[in-house]
Image (cartoon, rainbow, N blue to C red; front, side):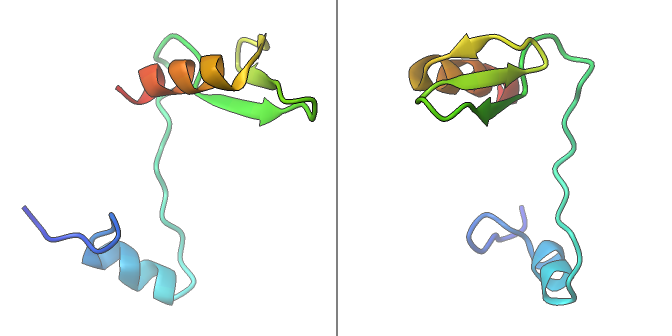
Length: 67
């Protein structure tokens, strides 16, 4: 396994040094929410469901998306 520095491998670090992008594609074909937008009153609108949830629920849903 390649060594990582702050979670990035060498190719990703070189890309950032050359003003490149490090992309982490999101599989939108999987069911469930994969993002959240802050509303401003301490709640978040989940993407793509549109549900308005608390911080704890946001963390729970996003942790399921990366599992």
